[in-house]
Length: 194
Image (tube, rainbow, N blue to C red; front, top):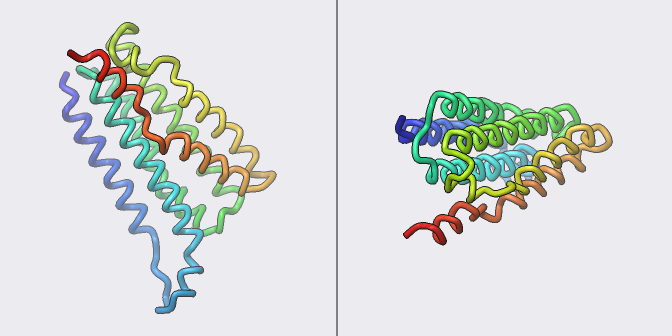
C-alpha cells in the first residue's frame, strides 16, 4: 500500500490542529499594550504547543520519508497518534485559560505522554513491517531521545501536584531536547544511499 495518502492525511490533520490552536486564542478587549498581559498564559501555552506539534510533524515527515510502504496496522497506529495530537488544542486552551493550574497542566502532560507512546507505537509498527534490518530500524537505533521523553513526561504528571511550574519546565525541557532536529534518519540515509 502506498504511503502517499497517509502522509497527505497526516499533514492535513496536523495543519488543522495548529489552525484550531490559533483560532482558540482570543484577542484582548482593549487596544493598549498592557492588555496583552491578560493573555500571556494563553500565548505561552500556544507557543509551547505549536512547537511540540511542529516537532511531531517534522519527525513524522522524516519517519515516513524512509518508509517504503504502509499497511493497515500502520494506518491505525498513525490514527492513534493523530488522535492524541488532536487533543492538544483543548488542553492548550484549558491550561492557558486557567493560568497553568494543576489539573489542566497534568492533563496536558497526559496528552503529551500518550502522544509520545503513540509515536513510539507508530515507529515500532513501521519497523515491524519493514524488518529489523531495514533502513528505518538502522537509522533510529536505540531511540534514546524517545525513551528519555517518555520518562520525563511520566515524571511531570505527578509533579504537577507539587507545583505546576515543575511540570511546565519539564515539558519545555522535552521540547528543547527535540527542538534540535532529529537527524538520525537524514544522517543514515546520507551515509547509506548511493
